[in-house]
Image (cartoon, each protein chain N blue to C red):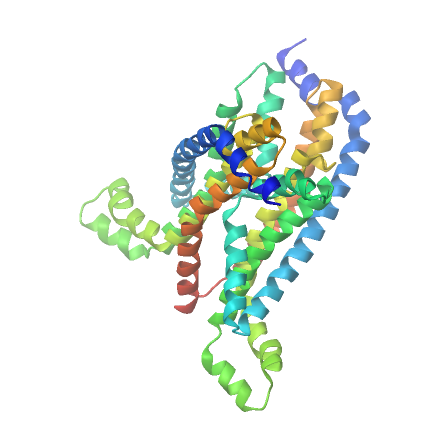
Length: 220
Length: 226
């Protein structure tokens, strides 16, 4: 058992490979989380215009990406687009897929946050002479973000976990590197190490979330 | 040939689509089987864990919280890879289908336990006391008084989470499950044409879009009144 799953020699030998993967997972997360937040902010701001012609297309957009598995989106970009003469490479495909997919989720959360800010806040802000954009930036968004902070955190956690999909299109992140190390050593220890790293990295966020969610329910 | 004609010839090639239609369809069947298995077993296990946790046995609760936190922290794909490529070293070789089912069910179990538990704890203490004082047993109070109120609260977050995890059946491709994406990918490499992939993508939309729209409706119907 220890020989197969927690082999110290293999841990030592494969550590440089796994460590490079960990570094790439962190970098990838630092790229795709802001990218998704940016996409979500765009969607939420569009939704806050409250024009009827805007409502349905936006809802359809969000629901489309809620229905579409991110891995299928990624494969479509990575393996489908080359047939249209567009070869983007795994990394760019991951960035685009995350922008579209996680942007839809972030957008839905931020929209709910903006809706939770009472209309009187905007009216008061506008009446003091702030422009629409200023009222949104300085008055509405800070409150909106605070109101949906647990949901934002929860989604960010999912986004970081989703970066493991990069392994399917040969982005050398943690899971990909661990599998490389596994096939080099004929031993599953590197995958166990990768799983342990994911757990250690994300567990604090899971604990925090669990508390926030319980408090939200208890305080209802 | 005009650009548009070449585009449709490539991405929506009639001949290729007709030829690989049965493959995609068999993939749809596998995806539905896998999804139903994951949803039923994952939610049942999550509810069972939440009920066990309500018994208030300390060491048991620590164990439950540990397992739940573990599967909330690990990416589903990592769990799948761990089971499929790791377990054979312990002389257990689950198929790709079983690995994917087990992994997604464990992940759904973890998330639904959290949601059920939050629902159960949200029912006011007085409800328990009132029910127990009328002579109901612990089990009767749980089933007839607490759960009906708790479950109503859990429906919106549970539907969302269930959809997100069920979409993960596509991850099965990585361990050679012949679900929609797997069938579409192999058809694409056999035909050197992306039309099967487009069909597969369409199949996902046909399967999941109605569920998402229904979930939106359920969400407003059972919305948490804050």
